[in-house]
Figure 1 (cartoon, rainbow, N blue to C red):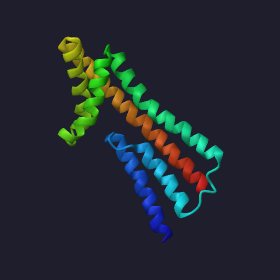
Figure 2 (cartoon, helix red, strand yellow):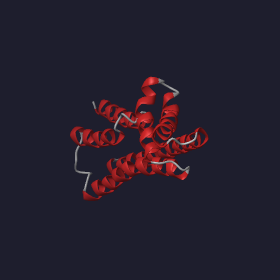
Figure 3 (cartoon, one colour):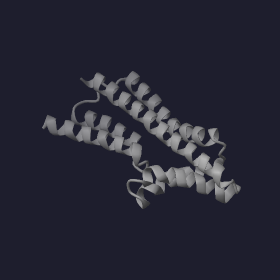
Figure 4 (cartoon, rainbow, N blue to C red):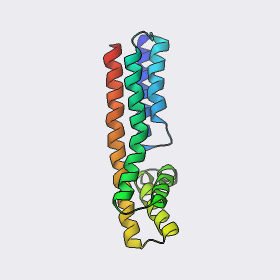
Length: 160
């Protein structure tokens, strides 16, 4: 039965990593669910105040990484809040409209459309902002992936 518990916990962690690419999946909740499943299946005793404090700080970092990466990518290339909103909307809708390409194209198209429609930015500048949005998205995936890996590694260090 213990192996089945670990498989379930690992599956929940895997879903969290899928959430890096499909932002509609709340990665943080799945990581925390893995911790809670461990506590329910085995014991909560390894999770002291230090464990929860460190994990909470990483949860805050995960939420901040998304916002800062997108903000940095769009603003760095001359975009406005319209580009940020467009990128965010494109990121959420893109994977559903164009299953594989939409993950990359969504934030790009959203940022370009946001800048063109709201700010009447030139096409050349809007495309530049779209690339900035894409760069921010990729940076966010890498950053959040590293943080999630660390959270799970710290969990494993604590319980094993």
